[in-house]
Image (tube, rainbow, N blue to C red; front, side, top):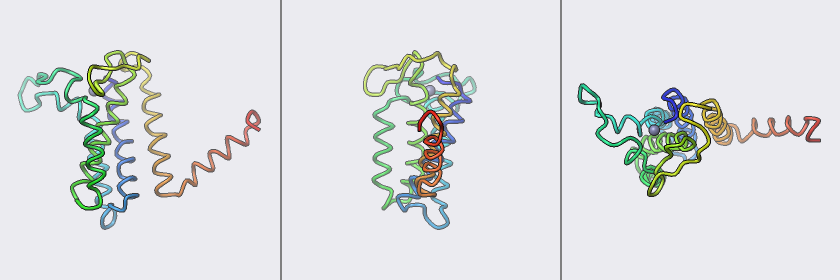
Length: 175
Ligand SMILES: [Zn+2]
């Protein structure tokens, strides 16, 4: 896995993305309470594929599901994500579920580049970019960049993205 720290850091980003998308779908509820719930669920979901396979109820906390098999199954997480998103307008529980799924998908993306890979469909696939725990900074930065863009789009109508783009365009190398 990407290191636990990286999963926490990207999980928070997933929470932000989920909250923004829930708000965007108009399912934020009174005072965006539901958005906030989906944020919390996103943080939980960010580490879920790893704690779901731990027998956390037993004292020895052994793995009861082989590491990176069922709890890291891409189809299940993406399916959950789509299902929850479609239910957003009509069901109040869909928002936290959507957040949880966002966290899970983010977790798989963070695990993807290292050699063990992720079973997206059947059999593991790895981007083979770096070893586990290495380059966490890239993973975390990418996650937060995405979160920033999504939140910017939903809450600020891309103001910050436009400013950043203008800044890059103004750089000598790009003009
Ligand atoms: Zn994992």
